[in-house]
Amino acid sequence: MEQTLVIFKPSAIERGLVGEIVARFERKGLIISAMKMMNLSEELLREHYAHLTDKPFFPEILSSMTASPVIVMILSGKEAISVVRLMTGATNGRQAAPGTIRGDFAMSNQENVIHASSSPEDAAAEIKRFFSPGEIYDYRPVAMKYINGPSE
Image 1 (spheres, one colour):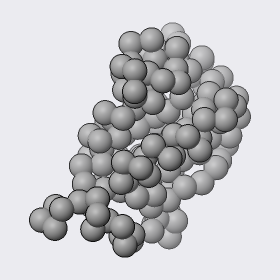
Image 2 (cartoon, rainbow, N blue to C red; image 1 turned 180 degrees about the vertical axis):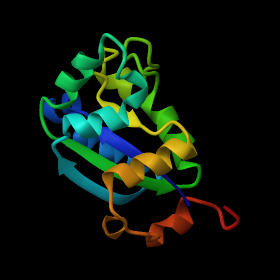
Image 3 (spheres, rainbow, N blue to C red; image 1 turned 120 degrees about the vertical axis):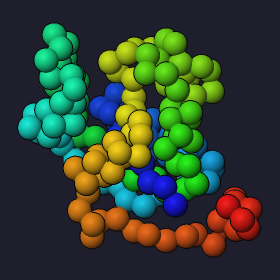
């Protein structure tokens, strides 16, 4: 099974959206393999957003992502990365399709509720950045036989 990292940003935490979003992932058939709440340090954010640190808006990212604790989560499942990205929607909430997480809950490019890994390489690096191996659980709920076909 493929794994992907999701971060519930302070905009999701402060607005009380976590439970509803987690429920969407669970109803889709994704497995929660790890989950924890944490405060993000500037050092960790500079590593996570290394591709944006030289942008003039990076201080806004730091301010936004340290406004409250976040929840980081690993989701597992068949094609989990692409499935989660589709469910998440376009980065800018104003442009995200209705029915997606950002389309339903975000009006901003910055305060867009959630982060999701964009590729297998990014997912692997991000998972390693936020979780130690002992924090990740590899299991298949009994209900999986009703979510994926026998050959999937």
